[in-house]
Image (cartoon, rainbow, N blue to C red; front, side, top):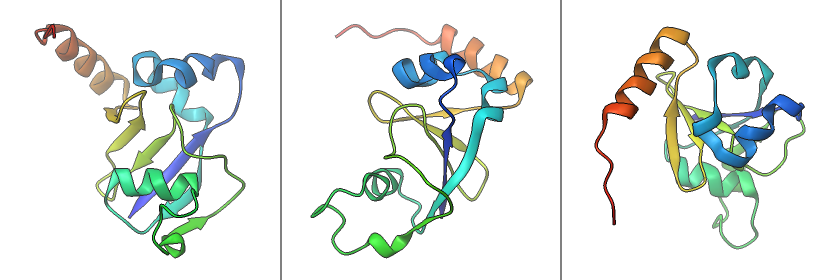
Length: 119
């Protein structure tokens, strides 16, 4: 089961809608609310179901339970799994984000230390 969280459209959230996890800060999570629950552990399937595209969900629309009005799942939205891991929809795929300031800082430090691969 995955919970879908979407943010309100305040001006400070605009960078997240454009750059995803690169612009996310832990304090921004206060602007998110739980809008739906999806009966799957697969992030890609949750993304498809959250976009309600006819013909792509193979009759599995029943897996999505909306708790309040929501827009289609897109960059900046957060999916939370049963273990509490938070996965942000990025420009391409998903990236785990942290809402605890200390963990967030460690994750940013580790990201900076990773070698960059040029293709």
